[in-house]
Length: 447
Image 1: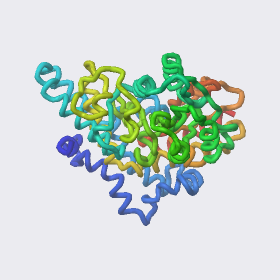
Image 2: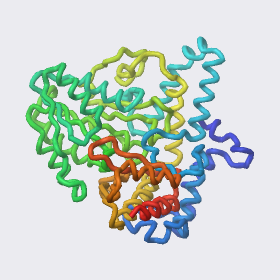
Image 3: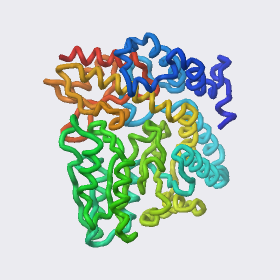
Image 4: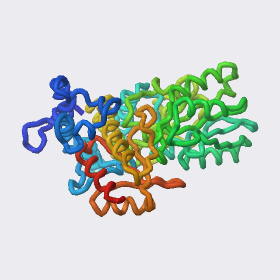
């Protein structure tokens, strides 16, 4: 990785490592002038109120630093890209890794694959573990969030009479996989309403709504870290701590397992597995992490991972539980191996700074939308209850009409695949405060 990142970038005399490190180092040097206080846009006043919406002052300086990251992506500069939660554009290190491995496989597949697959998969696990604050042998490699969800809920040890619990707003694949398991095992399936009104939701309400509905026979508690339907971020650690109290008096085979779909928090939030405190964590890495399409991770807590057994035979025999849980079969190997470069790309940007940047941009959008009389904002303003997804409605227009009108102005948004559906904006590290203000200006014109 070091050698690749230090290659000269386009003959400009800048190394790729320098481009990435520049965001952190130059802001540290300029902290007294405001560049190093990006998180104030999360907890304090918004960049728009500071006069940064037009790209001036401290926000302009931050945008200039983050433009070095933007240069790593081949995003069409004619558009404002606010639908990155769906599938990622690859930054240079990831794209180059895919191409390098593809060339090696094309040149001599019968030698390169058997001679390198084990080593390169180990590198992926180590990079993922470093990012997640975990151990490599606790991590399985998957093709997507849905695959991880299917592996956990199909493989979890339950018996007739156990209950599988989730929320109404959780991901379709979570609800479907739990229903499949209930039908096969004789367990029961139950959905709950995790809050009364998204516009007044609080952490205490979310924790009490879930823990208060855990029954003595509840074996699985399936939650989503960040809901793509509203942008709500659940307080996973608080839920885990309360669930631990419930489990204290239970036998191991009856303990309620906290399972988290983490795809829309991974790559945004500065949190590792120890911070979350869950038992199982499933996430695709082809979204906020910027890894290649068809990649993902599944993590199991060492104390409870034995509660889930494999579904698909593995081709990995020497990587502990994570290896056993990694489905075998021939994959898009060049994509899987390039996951290493995606995790390291994030580490070089800095997890804390990525979180600060995305929260800053999301808050600018939320505050701007909240001030429009013709807009209903659904994502909580509290940064502790939201991440990088912003959902809203425009009076008199369907969500599809809103997205279409934005696209006419070269702004790429998306809709939430739920009922009711909303328009959705998802800023990333490649966006600027000026782009957020331009987007808000277009939405103002929809009145």
